[in-house]
Amino acid sequence: MVRVIDNLTPSPFMIRRPGETSSTTSYVSLFLFFFEATILTDLGIAAAADSTVKHNGELERRIEELELQLAFYKRAHSVAVETSDTQKIQIATLNKQISSLDAFQTDLSPLIHCVLNGDEIFFSQVFLINGFQGGLRAAQLLTKAIAEYLSTEDLQLFTRISFWVTLFVNKIQLRNTLINQNICTHEQLDAFFSGFTQTSPRFIIVDVAGEGGADAKIKEYIATYACFPQTLRMLVGGCYTRNYNGLFSGLEGDALLGKVVMLHSGSPEAVRELQRLKIPSGLEVEGLFLETQTFLGQPPRPAPLQLENFNSAPSNGGLASPQSPIRGNGRVIDLALPLHKRTYLLPHLLLALPHKYASL
Image (cartoon, rainbow, N blue to C red; front, side, top):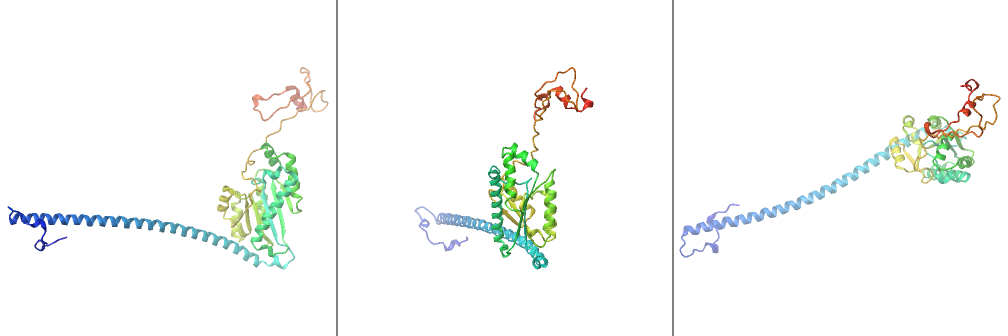
């Protein structure tokens, strides 16, 4: 700010005091002018600074609001893209079914298949301990949940639907692990299986043996029946491991993945696998399946070896040592104990050996 000194407004400070000269009065007036200008400048700078800080605060708040809106729209766009992809898969499957008119030109009933991998997912303990009635109840709840899902898919338009449930499980391994975990007894499990299969002639239990036996049969089962034009849905449970990546990729390439519906218990692990496999549909059945797979991956504990009571020398299959007296009441060898803690009765072991080793 520049002012012309000659146009200064007279100020009380400019009054000449006794003894002052005009030169002194001019210097005082000049000093006061610059002092006043400095004060006004400082006040202007302070006001401008306050205004700038306030404006910056408003801009920051606006930026935060815009960032929240941007995150919201990004999330909405992502959901819309996922929904679009899911609909594309389902539409492709539907178009393929429509193009194959054999399912509707014949008297064949539409098929709904439910496939359960008993090595990965199984029914809750509350059903197992109730034996036969527990099997009936589990089958009824499973049927009810699937029926409610199909009603939301507008599949009730078909008056006749053939509904099949197939459980693939290694019975021996499952029985041993469940018993060792104190989940149920041998009799309760057998009764549960009986009640489950007697619910309907189309409820089937397939006993598989060997490592990965269930996976191999299930993959072949799904690959075969998913190609049938009359198959409307394939509901699968316990099939979300990486062993099924190739199967689902092949179904997607054949425009058949839209038929697959993943059954799960709602656990975070199952939901993550469902998203990883990009299965378009999922059905959460709460309380029906075990929440944690505590009974999986544990080999059956070997039962103790029972030796027969050898009260007399055997006539076939062995020869008693003449130097060792024969004792009755054979001892039990617990194979679960370490080797150095097991108790062996050497004569009885010799009697159990073939004849050519009995004299050792």
